[in-house]
Length: 188
Image (tube, rainbow, N blue to C red):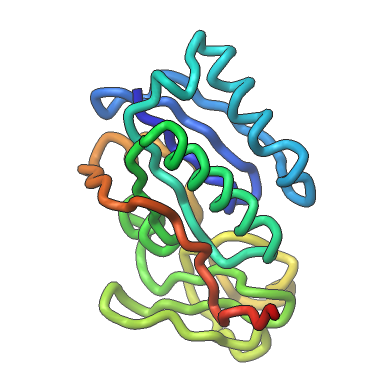
């Protein structure tokens, strides 16, 4: 059984899949409660499907620069599972998830209160853009529509993971997940 983890989208999602078919899906809200709830939510989801971590062959994780604690707790938890259970990992950034789900460019993903990361095409590097500088357009994205009220900005986002699961070959090469940082934190 394979496990998909997306705690970056507004509604976090855990998916069990096998042979490119979704077996079970669990949506939950973890924002501000990562430390307390992530591991227990994961374990409860597996238990509700009569599984344990020992039954998981591979883990796919969406990794993204969001709140510092959020990113680190999920990455540390998944890395610990990898270390103790030797389960291969695949970490994808959110742009890769959007792209592999055939959403179109340009793509916007919220970076912080004042900026979004804008990726204009599959070959470009994401760049930080201040919210008032984002031009009117059709974007694939996640997060706050309120940032664009009274603007002529149209948005598309992932509502279903079926295409992503069915149409992608997963190559599990990561031994651990590094938190995805826009700017490396300065911690002493």
